[in-house]
Image: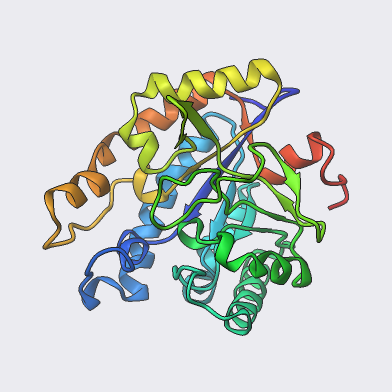
Length: 288
């Protein structure tokens, strides 16, 4: 859908399926090589970019920095198609457990690689697995010091064992250091904050639930952010052996229908890049 006076933010977290889940379940080393993951990413990105072109939608692609090192042409392909490039850290490793010094070095390496590959300035960040929480808020200072203008790593919930920061605002806000935060959306059900911003939740919930939430936010004039992965849109996602029944369900439910479901969402709602939404909302200057 073409841009209108209002738009939600559409974001794509670019990583391979196996490397995405390597900290949650056992993944064989044969599935973690850059070449294997990059071939998968290339195939899925082609489908994703085709779908966005079909709907005249723009998005922010949060790339792992290591992809800019091993397959820079993929980053350039996305940038050349008119989309924004954001940083998803150097590797798909949670910020939890890292020291500020480790994070700082990997952040700089990732950003430099992404800017070299895309030829564009990179000002936005999203942590792998949304892994910035109450115990590592120092990461926001590192991001601001590193020249980033906005972050989208926070989910205002306490229901997940890996991520969540329940006491933050649900809309766009600034941290004390000036860094802009664009949290993932939540839906209040019986007093519980349920994430509804995309990814596995988009696959799990009926499409009508996600569509209804984003339509209501549009009616209220409140932009929200939606996220998805290339492997949830494209045709390739390797089978990980040894998963429990619950894990198999969580990781594979409705993977094959991702393109169709996203197409239906793009057909009824306007989406654009994170930076464009932040400009329209008065948090970024056009020159940024």
